[in-house]
Image (tube, rainbow over all chains, first blue to last red; front, side, top):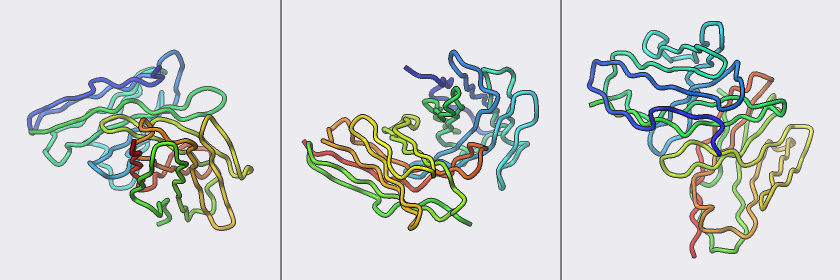
Length: 115
Length: 112
């Protein structure tokens, strides 16, 4: 079964509005989670590292004021796309590190469509 | 900058055949490699990983080979099944920060 859960799996929002995507670790604590973005037929691109209790670390070229990340607890990180535009439409995926084996597991992804 | 890439963007095999998916990486500092399977519309699914102190690791029907000399990684799938049809990504990490750099992906199609 899934060890990392995302919600919603699909969301449609109007241009100019904000939308929040949740990433939860199931039955384990994740002090660090990662957010990726994937455009159709392309690879995953790391957006930011979400750190519980501190600010997220963003990759070069990713606007921190547009993609707000909040690691609210040891099992939850949220990504808020602010003032969304059609070009923000993408597949957003989170990941978390599980256990002493340090295996990286991904969530099921969230499809965002901005109309 | 350095990146992970794949030799073959598509691979088509017959059911029951063995599949080999290749990946070249250029960051000599990378010490952790992972293969993921991604089905359409879903998140990446962990298949197998390998650290740089190993050159081979086996799982159920899958084997990952690492050749650090030529910076090459491969995923072998034995007795490929239609359910194996998906896009396969290799990913690399340098250091202990678990920030992954993904390759372009290979679309594997298994014909019944």
